[in-house]
Amino acid sequence: MSKEDKKQEKLELIRHSTAHIMAEAVLEMFPDAKIAIGPSIENGFYYDFELPRSLTQDDLEVISETMRAIMKAGKDFVRTEVSKAEALEMFKDQPFKVELINELPEDEVITTYNQGGFTDLCRGPHVENTSKLNPQSFKLLSIAGAYWRGDESRTMLQRIYGTAWTNPKDLRLHLQHLEEMEKRDHRKLGRELDLFSLHEEAGPGLVYWHPKGARIRLAIEDFWRKEHYRNGYEMVYTPHVGKSWLWETSGHLDFYKEGMFNSMEMDSSDYYAKPMNCPFHIMIYNNTKRSYRELPCRWAELGTVYRYEKSGSLHGLMRVRGFTQDDAHIICTPEQMSGEIAETLRFSLFMLRSFGFTEFKAYLSTKPLAGKSVGPQEKWDAATESLRKAIEAAGLEYDVDEGGGAFYGPKIDLKVKDAMGRDWQLSTIQFDFNLPERFKMTFVDHDGQEKQPYVIHRALLGSIERFFGVLIEHFGGAFPVWLSPVQVCVIPVAAAFDDYAKKVAADLRAEGLRVDTDLSDSRMNAKIRNAQNQKIPYMLIIGEKEEAEGAVSVRLRTGKQTNGVPFADFLSQINEKIDSKEL
Image (cartoon, rainbow, N blue to C red):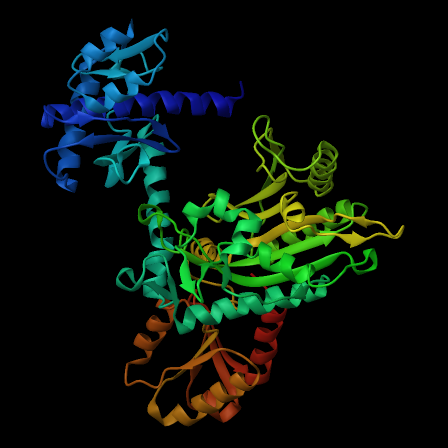
């Protein structure tokens, strides 16, 4: 076992043990509480409770003090094996535990752990003694609602989240990391920078793009389209709804209906808002007889889709009900398939690097080991091997999820690491052996025979909404100049220089730059502070000397300032940074 693995194993022992101690402290405060589950998770732990009243932040401090006392008391964690009948008797007043015990096989050995004042149903392991836990190395962080077993029809519980570490220094570093994450939260920055909003009363999970957010989206989409044309794609546009026949044929009504919006009736037919773009692209393909000479077809669409996500799972831009996929389908011959996969992966990495991501890991999901799958084995083998070779040729670190593929084909998922060290799954390259069969797709090969093409789904950014949320947090709202909604703010030092400020702004707009001009009565320092708070990359300070010399004083959002820069020189510099997509 590596040093890092040993460290992680030790942390999991600490966190799991701390969760048990937290449960003991909660039961001391609320003796009639009902306890559910309390696992360790990445960077911490949680425990779910049914309590007689709602918890407050003040309660967390009381619980924490009780936990510290338990740790200092030096109680042993004692493991005991019990029968199912014994376990049911032991936890007869804990309905959530009883439910879990009843689901266990009759002959399974059941274990409990006790640390003096509390016994829990648990497989373990734990630290030997509560004194092994540092009372200054944990913190209870937050309270949240959680349905029992994630089911909205079940009891709503109160979940306490916490974090625990081996020493106070590591805890302090983690809390600083959490503080920085909070500052970067895309929901918080979305409000502060006036980028987007969500309106529960008008429909949860539906995004309203404000003018500044729309400017960034347009910059992303313009770059996306330009690069797709450059890489041999054609654009298509497809409807937002389709008759039930389409979704019956594609199989979505059989396999995905719970994730779709309800049907709407028109002209005695049921229509559904599209959850995917795929069937529409295939309808375009099947509109005419295709020859091998036309392949590959690379068709891309920024297509808005609608999926019914449970209200409890909605989260800012990261989990929504209406979103725009940067979707494409590649339809090719078997001979073209390996080359198309390699090129798609290269293109995906180029796009992600263009937005400032440099660390990647690939995940290869292969044919399900059991259960239903479609397509002959030779197709699965060829497709999987093409994915593997593409990953290895790109020099990417990767894991193989044996049997983890969808029933309709193997895939690659790409995860990127952001500025905070968090992993985000963005790009997907997915084979589909299901839709070509269901829609009877064919092409006439060079031997005159009709054959079935390969279909490759791919989304490079994932969805525009989620990708935008990731970008906000990655850059902390301080976007590179090519993406910034306002690239330059022109600030006259006094009203006497408003006309020159307007001229500078007009000249910048004529060059295609996104410009604001602050002609308010505020003091200059207040104007600068406001522009910095809005994370505008460049402020041009305009005064008597600048007007006389046809120059500008250039102030960066970092506070660095260069005076008396000829306007033409500034224009050349900023255009160079925009054209090169400097980050």
